[in-house]
Length: 453
Image (cartoon, rainbow, N blue to C red):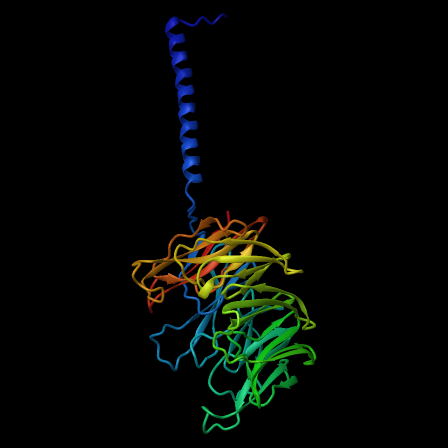
């Protein structure tokens, strides 16, 4: 049978074809305009995958499947109830899997989280408690053998292969704590006994060198300390084997009286990055030096001279590179990248943080650095004022360009570095999780997760 189209049917068919062509052309134009607009908009805002209404009082820690957070009791509670709760949150759903009330602590905050041996450990006044990752049930505990410290503080330094390391400063004259000397010891203990101890020089105090803190890394205790001598104040770094308590190396130098002298140290991987700066009065200029020191031997690998006035803090390392915060007066988003093994200069870049202000600790992964940026509600207010918003941005580590960011957080601040975990069954995908804390007793403090695009 032959099918013969009438003139009217042919006309209708042509109209339908023309409509289809015009529709396709319009769609392509709209798509092009959308892509052009997107390319010209540097602020790609990603919405959270999930949100948990919790206020973090310590740094988050994750094992990939779970993220652990400590929330203190509300500030309005009587001081006698300085308790807190540990939450285990599923990283895929944001749901609380379990929660455990933690042992009493004299001060709010100042607790530490350590993830090791398939156990989550939490410090408190009298020791450390370990919980089962899956159920939250009590798994193990360590009790400090010496707790004669002057004032309440966290004594925990770290944990390695079921050996816990902590320190204590005991006042020699408790009747006058403002002038007394101290006897300071460091202990390595198991669940049953003390296996070694190390005593610092007379009147030696743990830490005390700027903001440098003790660290247990790869079975080595990095112990910064200070003590008085007949010639003045002495600074000391000590490297110790955690298993035996033996001193592997020491480094010692007099503390300069020049108030402009700045020192900082960061233990990252197998290396201690130590920065010193001061003012050269003969040349009337500031200068600084970053040293990379092998954590096992105490020997210097390399050093890099900075001729400008800067804080030079080492913020992160990758397999091959070292990221140094080079901003002046602790503000700004200028970074220096060095070769990890040689200290050779590789590049500089500047991340636009919106306002010229210091940022909280960052994280560096897969060619991105994640930093908090601030948005004060009123530009006349100082950044110490609570009237500000914030957001977390992902910046390219070669150009400093903002790649994407989170939505703005009202009257909040990111006090701790974010964590990154892999997405189950999708090895190429990762998620970024961080805590934002509201200014004030009540408000919108949150833990949020973002799928990294």
